Length: 314
Image (cartoon, rainbow, N blue to C red):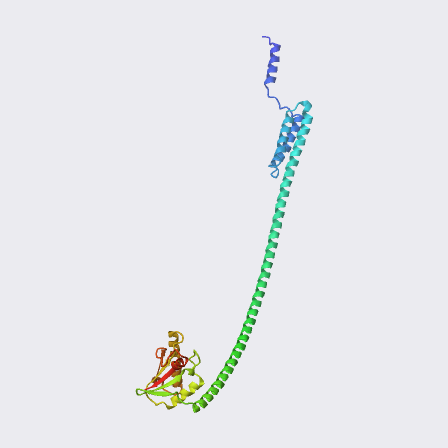
């Protein structure tokens, strides 16, 4: 059987077509695109720049994709544009990184300045507080010194005043002693010459009458002559028996005022009799006011007789 030559040829051609083909080598353009992709990938993989320059990075990726699909006539220009975009993306990311670092440095500088300012402010505050406390201590010391000086001055003034008052009192006491001695001498002389008040007998009693001139007008103070007369009376009174001292007034003035005045005058006579040696238990002093006149109050002579103190000896 004869073999068909065309069959062998067709068989060889079929075997050639079905055999696996070796991969074609990448073109220069594809290699350039791959290199640019690797460069962009290194930018994306840089941890310090990965999140920066996003807009320029997107533009670079778009330019690279455009270069990969560019026509043969546009490939060189597209590759140059993609390369430039990648460089711009890197520069933008680095610029943004530098800006962040500069901002961080500014913040750190501001923090350092703020902390320094705070420390300086604290130092100034502490210095001011120290000065304030020192001034306060000086003020308190001055105040204590002032108070001490004032206390010493007041003590000196009080001591001087007390000394002056003591001297004044001593002088006054001596003056009173001298005056009392003078009055006692005058009274003793007057007593030697004085006579007891005039008297009368009434129902077994002796009534001695001090006239109204024994007192100053409106006063319950005995005159020196009246005192001498009462001392003379005390010297001759018996050593026992009740004595009643009655004060009387005229009708001039109010009744209540006259009653009070008569009581004060009766008390003045009682006290003098006691001073003259009459026992106080024997003497009773009463005021009669204008209730018991002995003459007509319508005349000056009658009113003078009604102004009297009567000493009634039982």
